[in-house]
Amino acid sequence: MSESDKKRVKLLNRQQLKIMKHSTNRHVIQKRRIEKIRSRIHGTKIRPRLSLYRSNNHLEAQVIDDTVGKTLCAVHDRLLKGVKPAKGQTKNIAAAHALGILLAEKAKAKKIIDVVFDRRGAKYHGRVRAFAEGARAGGLNF
Image (cartoon, rainbow, N blue to C red):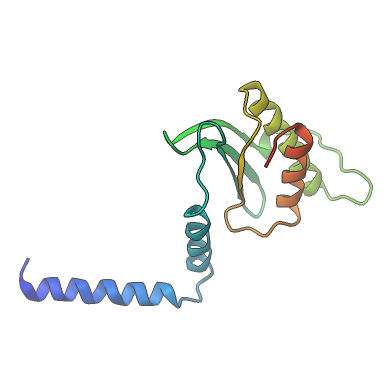
């Protein structure tokens, strides 16, 4: 690679960083928020990371040991069948709460009690909050 090509690559990288730093694109902002949170949260064998992925329609959760990069247990809301919401509760909130309880049962079967909660940049309300309360009700500490 010639000297002028190297300068051009450096210039392009700087421009891309500048664009990403001041971007208004929702996906770029969300990715930046997730990376910022992940820089502070680490799962260990004693206290693994509970990562929650929330899409528009579904929830997925994993308990991850970051020291070896291994998923210890995982659940998805498609595993739930026939969840009935309580009075004044939506079906999605009820499903998130039931999913939290299901994950806690799976984690306790593998002798995992303490976890670090990683909500991946989502606000702590709605389905995220219901999932966390369900996991706590199931016996997880975070």
